[in-house]
Image (tube, rainbow, N blue to C red; front, side, top):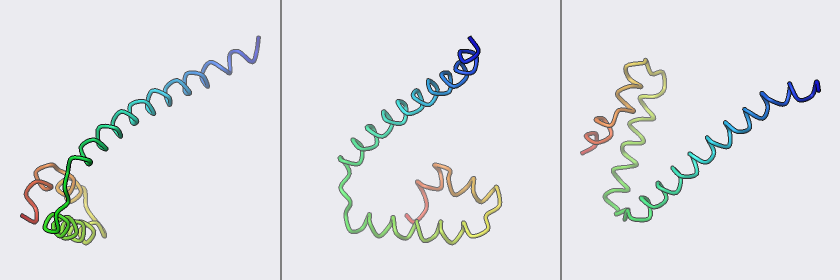
Amino acid sequence: MPGNASAKPINAEIKSVKKQRDGLTIEKRGLELRLSQVQVTPDLHARIKRQATEIRAKLRNPMYEQKRQLFSSDYRSHSTE
């Protein structure tokens, strides 16, 4: 059956996409749970805004090293403190 051969890669891709979707759904639920437990105080809100402004300015024409620093957990945990 000629149609069956072309359906195999499509079915494999569908299966892969569904697996990715399921993983993202699990991640989304975990993030929603974490966010529901965080109280955004005015101080935290101001710190987030300052950090976003700083990152936005540095992302105008970033080099690889700048991107790496901006998105490292070390940068996120120590900047604007």
